[in-house]
Image 1 (cartoon, rainbow, N blue to C red):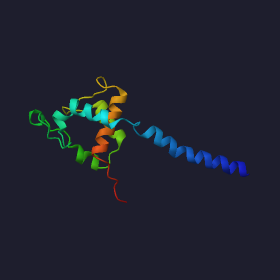
Image 2: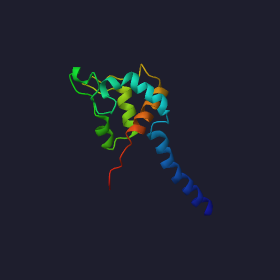
Image 3: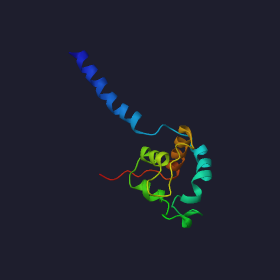
Length: 122
């Protein structure tokens, strides 16, 4: 009986841990991500992550204001998917064929360091 309780406890702890492992972007290196942001993202999203980069006015749709986008409670995995796949019907193309997985993780880590996620109030 005691063994069953221990096994139940072990299994119940594994579910949240597994969700964390598979549900979030692996850790990246924000300092490397900063270089990548300056090289690939700054021209559209701007130095303040507000969508007001030097090329923003020349695009048919304004770039996403990452401060507003991330404040809405989107997690690192949402940001990773947007970088990887781009945004349909917008000038934001996918970077999956240009950046490595680790570079995408680094970019997410940098953006998250600069624009922390605000947890919605319950």
